[in-house]
Image (cartoon, rainbow, N blue to C red; front, top):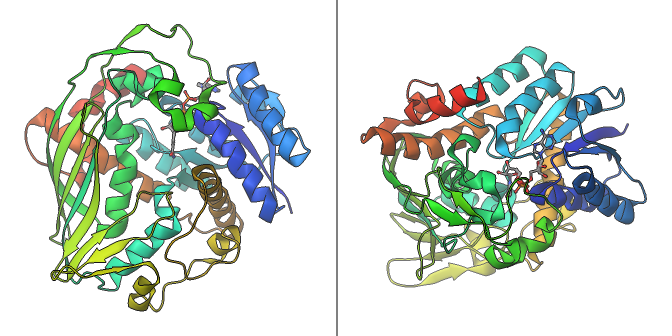
Length: 424
Ligand SMILES: NC(=O)c1ccc[n+]([C@@H]2O[C@H](COP(=O)([O-])OP(=O)(O)OC[C@H]3O[C@@H](n4cnc5c(N)ncnc54)[C@H](O)[C@@H]3O)[C@@H](O)[C@H]2O)c1
């Protein structure tokens, strides 16, 4: 039986989803992209054309989400709009009897996420989140190394992502500069880092953070200058009301330095900024009683490394001796051409990105078909967003917050204004 899916939001990430679907079709013919939707017809049309060129089947084009939902043949929807629409479209789709996969962050705020979670419970529809980093086979290996005691007892994790947008609007997307649209690197990118920390270290208890908006005046620059590696995925999108060179007010937090206490007792540092000019720093390590795990960049295919106290290093296939039970699951293995026990792989970024997206679709479809939960469902999506928002809420409050309080809405000072503005 074919699972018919519709894609809403055909901007930069929507185009990457189309490539994920094309990759999926190379291995599985059980999913069909029946429709694509974007408020801009030409933007949706570009994505439909890419799919048609690669698969021979052109998805129907819509500019109105509700009209698309009236189709009787859909089984699921992939939501890849900018973040404020995630909860609205997800709830509408689930109430119409469709399964959902939404891009990260799961929703605009934790209140939006709770509404999505409740809709999934009430309707019985799958609510999956397209959180991609953890699905990288090297992050699967990293988790197995931590869980199997490869670094002994984990003491602390460092996750620092200090980059520079060079005074420009992040990713040339104005919504990423705006508080009420869940913009800013701490949320939009930090939710990935948060998910990875939770994936590797277990649940988080409390967070204390200092936050700032250091650069309130940004300039809209072309993606080819801001993020050249992704530019070809974004060259068809439209930025309504703004032109290249325009000044844009940044209202979203652009910097957070946070300290986390995990429920295990371990400590974490999660620091994010796009204002670190002249100093680009990416640190992803976990230190424990028997050494430090250096995590490779997600989607690089590089091997993790463990460095012991005496300076000796374990990397590549030698890592596999530490994890005799490590094996990629069936879907990942199929997409990675049959690989089961690997410690690195060589593929370009776009291919890796597409394979992971293919995995995410198949994970959602499997959950729908078996009545089970996707790997990243409402709980995991909310946990990651709650941790990212905990940094921002703590920064506003000037005090530590618990992640559970943020998840359940007992601490929401920063988000209240967003919820009010969005009418939820
Ligand atoms: N997982 C990842 O690595 C990753 C990477 C980038 C973006 N994302 C997420 O994907 C989402 C989209 O990001 P993007 O970079 O593609 O942004 P984008 O602005 O390039 O694309 C969003 C698209 O949604 C469309 N849209 C907006 N409102 C709509 C509506 N009401 N109906 C139909 N279409 C509508 C816009 O026209 C635009 O084309 C965001 O939530 C973002 O956080 C995830």
